[in-house]
Length: 210
Ligand SMILES: C[S@@+](CC[C@H](N)C(=O)[O-])C[C@H]1O[C@@H](n2cnc3c(N)ncnc32)[C@H](O)[C@@H]1O
Image (tube, rainbow, N blue to C red):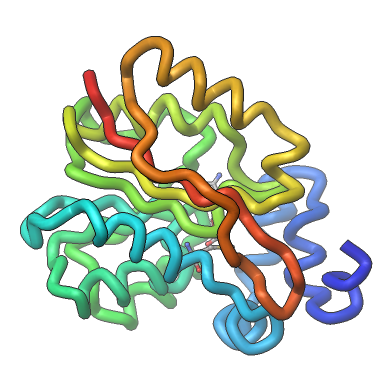
Protein backbone atom coordinates (compact mmCIF):
# COMPACT_ATOMS: atom_id res chain seq x y z
CA UNK A 1 0.00 0.00 0.00
CA UNK A 2 2.92 2.33 -0.74
CA UNK A 3 0.77 4.19 -3.22
CA UNK A 4 -1.93 4.75 -0.62
CA UNK A 5 0.45 6.07 2.02
CA UNK A 6 1.73 8.78 -0.32
CA UNK A 7 -1.51 9.61 -2.12
CA UNK A 8 -4.05 9.48 0.68
CA UNK A 9 -2.43 9.38 4.14
CA UNK A 10 -5.81 9.56 5.88
CA UNK A 11 -6.96 6.31 4.26
CA UNK A 12 -3.59 4.65 4.89
CA UNK A 13 -3.85 5.46 8.60
CA UNK A 14 -7.35 3.94 8.93
CA UNK A 15 -6.09 0.69 7.37
CA UNK A 16 -3.23 0.40 9.87
CA UNK A 17 -4.82 1.03 13.26
CA UNK A 18 -3.98 -0.96 16.38
CA UNK A 19 -7.56 -1.08 17.68
CA UNK A 20 -11.11 0.26 17.32
CA UNK A 21 -10.45 3.22 19.65
CA UNK A 22 -7.69 4.43 17.39
CA UNK A 23 -9.94 3.95 14.37
CA UNK A 24 -12.71 5.92 16.08
CA UNK A 25 -10.35 8.85 16.68
CA UNK A 26 -9.39 8.92 13.01
CA UNK A 27 -12.99 8.96 11.80
CA UNK A 28 -13.93 11.51 14.44
CA UNK A 29 -11.55 14.06 12.97
CA UNK A 30 -11.88 13.13 9.30
CA UNK A 31 -13.76 16.19 8.07
CA UNK A 32 -12.50 15.72 4.49
CA UNK A 33 -13.65 12.08 4.28
CA UNK A 34 -15.83 12.60 1.20
CA UNK A 35 -13.23 14.55 -0.73
CA UNK A 36 -10.43 12.14 0.21
CA UNK A 37 -12.24 8.95 -0.74
CA UNK A 38 -13.97 10.21 -3.88
CA UNK A 39 -11.57 12.79 -5.36
CA UNK A 40 -8.23 11.41 -4.16
CA UNK A 41 -8.87 7.65 -4.02
CA UNK A 42 -11.58 7.33 -6.70
CA UNK A 43 -13.70 5.18 -4.34
CA UNK A 44 -16.71 3.46 -5.93
CA UNK A 45 -17.59 0.86 -3.27
CA UNK A 46 -20.90 2.58 -2.50
CA UNK A 47 -21.85 2.50 -6.18
CA UNK A 48 -21.01 -1.14 -6.91
CA UNK A 49 -22.74 -2.50 -3.80
CA UNK A 50 -25.96 -0.53 -4.37
CA UNK A 51 -26.02 -1.31 -8.11
CA UNK A 52 -25.69 -5.02 -7.32
CA UNK A 53 -28.55 -4.84 -4.81
CA UNK A 54 -30.82 -2.84 -7.11
CA UNK A 55 -30.41 -5.45 -9.85
CA UNK A 56 -32.26 -7.91 -7.55
CA UNK A 57 -34.29 -6.00 -4.96
CA UNK A 58 -37.35 -4.66 -6.75
CA UNK A 59 -39.50 -3.80 -3.72
CA UNK A 60 -39.00 -0.08 -3.08
CA UNK A 61 -40.60 -0.40 0.37
CA UNK A 62 -37.90 -2.82 1.47
CA UNK A 63 -36.31 -2.11 4.83
CA UNK A 64 -32.59 -1.77 4.15
CA UNK A 65 -29.73 -1.58 6.64
CA UNK A 66 -26.71 0.50 5.59
CA UNK A 67 -24.09 -1.15 7.81
CA UNK A 68 -21.12 1.13 8.46
CA UNK A 69 -22.98 3.96 6.75
CA UNK A 70 -20.23 6.56 7.19
CA UNK A 71 -21.33 9.92 5.78
CA UNK A 72 -24.24 8.30 3.94
CA UNK A 73 -23.10 7.60 0.38
CA UNK A 74 -25.08 4.35 0.15
CA UNK A 75 -28.23 5.81 1.71
CA UNK A 76 -28.06 8.75 -0.68
CA UNK A 77 -27.95 6.53 -3.76
CA UNK A 78 -30.71 4.21 -2.55
CA UNK A 79 -32.98 7.08 -1.52
CA UNK A 80 -32.70 8.75 -4.90
CA UNK A 81 -33.45 5.42 -6.60
CA UNK A 82 -36.75 5.34 -4.70
CA UNK A 83 -35.88 3.21 -1.66
CA UNK A 84 -37.04 5.28 1.30
CA UNK A 85 -36.91 2.87 4.24
CA UNK A 86 -33.21 2.98 5.06
CA UNK A 87 -31.65 2.49 8.47
CA UNK A 88 -28.03 3.58 8.95
CA UNK A 89 -25.63 2.34 11.62
CA UNK A 90 -22.01 3.17 12.30
CA UNK A 91 -19.70 3.06 15.32
CA UNK A 92 -18.60 6.67 14.82
CA UNK A 93 -20.89 9.35 16.26
CA UNK A 94 -19.25 11.97 14.05
CA UNK A 95 -19.82 9.97 10.86
CA UNK A 96 -23.49 9.52 11.85
CA UNK A 97 -23.78 13.29 12.35
CA UNK A 98 -22.46 13.82 8.82
CA UNK A 99 -24.86 11.16 7.45
CA UNK A 100 -27.83 12.85 9.16
CA UNK A 101 -27.29 15.94 6.98
CA UNK A 102 -28.07 13.88 3.85
CA UNK A 103 -31.66 13.57 5.09
CA UNK A 104 -32.15 10.16 3.52
CA UNK A 105 -32.32 7.80 6.51
CA UNK A 106 -35.40 6.65 8.47
CA UNK A 107 -33.07 6.34 11.45
CA UNK A 108 -29.39 6.48 12.31
CA UNK A 109 -27.78 4.87 15.32
CA UNK A 110 -24.52 3.89 16.91
CA UNK A 111 -23.53 0.26 16.50
CA UNK A 112 -20.38 -1.82 16.57
CA UNK A 113 -20.64 -4.38 13.80
CA UNK A 114 -18.04 -6.62 15.47
CA UNK A 115 -20.49 -7.27 18.35
CA UNK A 116 -23.94 -8.86 18.65
CA UNK A 117 -26.27 -6.42 16.91
CA UNK A 118 -29.15 -4.76 18.67
CA UNK A 119 -31.71 -5.85 16.06
CA UNK A 120 -34.20 -8.73 16.24
CA UNK A 121 -33.87 -11.78 13.98
CA UNK A 122 -35.26 -11.16 10.46
CA UNK A 123 -35.44 -7.36 10.80
CA UNK A 124 -34.30 -6.35 7.30
CA UNK A 125 -35.10 -7.11 3.68
CA UNK A 126 -31.55 -6.22 2.71
CA UNK A 127 -28.20 -5.09 4.05
CA UNK A 128 -25.59 -3.06 2.20
CA UNK A 129 -22.11 -2.88 3.67
CA UNK A 130 -19.78 -0.78 1.51
CA UNK A 131 -16.16 -0.07 2.35
CA UNK A 132 -16.44 -1.46 5.90
CA UNK A 133 -15.07 -4.98 5.44
CA UNK A 134 -11.59 -3.60 5.17
CA UNK A 135 -8.22 -3.71 6.95
CA UNK A 136 -8.44 -2.61 10.59
CA UNK A 137 -12.26 -2.28 10.45
CA UNK A 138 -14.76 -5.16 10.45
CA UNK A 139 -13.89 -8.83 9.77
CA UNK A 140 -15.86 -11.74 8.29
CA UNK A 141 -17.28 -12.81 11.69
CA UNK A 142 -19.79 -9.95 11.30
CA UNK A 143 -21.46 -11.81 8.43
CA UNK A 144 -23.12 -14.24 10.86
CA UNK A 145 -24.97 -11.43 12.64
CA UNK A 146 -25.92 -9.87 9.32
CA UNK A 147 -27.52 -13.15 8.24
CA UNK A 148 -29.37 -13.40 11.57
CA UNK A 149 -31.03 -9.99 11.19
CA UNK A 150 -31.89 -10.45 7.50
CA UNK A 151 -35.23 -12.00 6.50
CA UNK A 152 -35.50 -15.20 4.50
CA UNK A 153 -34.96 -14.30 0.81
CA UNK A 154 -33.39 -10.98 1.81
CA UNK A 155 -30.12 -9.80 0.28
CA UNK A 156 -26.72 -8.89 1.69
CA UNK A 157 -24.48 -6.87 -0.63
CA UNK A 158 -20.94 -6.03 0.45
CA UNK A 159 -17.45 -5.16 -0.66
CA UNK A 160 -14.26 -6.58 0.80
CA UNK A 161 -11.11 -4.60 0.03
CA UNK A 162 -8.58 -6.84 -1.78
CA UNK A 163 -5.85 -6.82 0.92
CA UNK A 164 -8.44 -7.60 3.60
CA UNK A 165 -9.92 -10.44 1.50
CA UNK A 166 -6.44 -11.95 1.07
CA UNK A 167 -5.56 -11.60 4.78
CA UNK A 168 -8.78 -12.84 6.47
CA UNK A 169 -10.91 -16.00 6.20
CA UNK A 170 -13.80 -14.56 4.13
CA UNK A 171 -13.92 -17.66 1.90
CA UNK A 172 -14.35 -19.86 4.99
CA UNK A 173 -17.16 -17.77 6.53
CA UNK A 174 -18.94 -17.48 3.19
CA UNK A 175 -18.67 -21.20 2.48
CA UNK A 176 -19.76 -22.16 6.01
CA UNK A 177 -22.89 -20.06 5.65
CA UNK A 178 -23.51 -21.62 2.27
CA UNK A 179 -23.02 -25.21 3.47
CA UNK A 180 -25.30 -24.49 6.46
CA UNK A 181 -27.88 -23.44 3.84
CA UNK A 182 -28.20 -20.01 5.45
CA UNK A 183 -27.54 -18.16 2.21
CA UNK A 184 -26.74 -18.68 -1.45
CA UNK A 185 -24.48 -16.77 -3.75
CA UNK A 186 -26.20 -14.52 -6.27
CA UNK A 187 -23.23 -12.49 -7.51
CA UNK A 188 -19.53 -12.50 -6.68
CA UNK A 189 -16.73 -10.98 -8.70
CA UNK A 190 -13.67 -8.76 -8.62
CA UNK A 191 -14.91 -5.20 -8.86
CA UNK A 192 -13.48 -1.73 -9.13
CA UNK A 193 -13.21 -0.22 -5.66
CA UNK A 194 -10.66 2.54 -5.16
CA UNK A 195 -9.81 3.35 -8.74
CA UNK A 196 -7.18 6.10 -8.40
CA UNK A 197 -5.51 4.19 -5.58
CA UNK A 198 -5.36 1.11 -7.83
CA UNK A 199 -7.15 -1.24 -5.42
CA UNK A 200 -10.02 -3.57 -6.30
CA UNK A 201 -12.41 -5.52 -4.08
CA UNK A 202 -14.46 -8.68 -3.93
CA UNK A 203 -18.07 -7.70 -4.57
CA UNK A 204 -20.46 -10.16 -2.93
CA UNK A 205 -24.23 -10.39 -3.14
CA UNK A 206 -25.87 -13.23 -1.23
CA UNK A 207 -29.49 -14.17 -0.65
CA UNK A 208 -30.49 -15.42 2.78
CA UNK A 209 -32.25 -18.82 2.65
CA UNK A 210 -33.13 -19.78 6.20
C1 LIG B 1 -14.50 3.45 4.66
S1 LIG B 1 -15.86 3.95 5.60
C2 LIG B 1 -17.21 3.48 4.52
C3 LIG B 1 -18.44 4.30 4.81
C4 LIG B 1 -19.56 4.16 3.81
N1 LIG B 1 -20.19 2.86 3.85
C5 LIG B 1 -19.07 4.50 2.42
O1 LIG B 1 -19.23 3.66 1.52
O2 LIG B 1 -18.57 5.61 2.25
C6 LIG B 1 -15.97 2.75 6.87
C7 LIG B 1 -17.01 3.06 7.92
O3 LIG B 1 -17.08 1.96 8.82
C8 LIG B 1 -17.25 2.46 10.12
N2 LIG B 1 -16.79 1.41 11.03
C9 LIG B 1 -15.53 0.98 11.25
N3 LIG B 1 -15.51 0.00 12.15
C10 LIG B 1 -16.81 -0.21 12.52
C11 LIG B 1 -17.45 -1.09 13.44
N4 LIG B 1 -16.76 -1.98 14.16
N5 LIG B 1 -18.79 -1.02 13.56
C12 LIG B 1 -19.51 -0.13 12.84
N6 LIG B 1 -18.96 0.73 11.96
C13 LIG B 1 -17.62 0.69 11.80
C14 LIG B 1 -16.42 3.73 10.15
O4 LIG B 1 -16.82 4.58 11.19
C15 LIG B 1 -16.71 4.29 8.76
O5 LIG B 1 -17.80 5.15 8.76
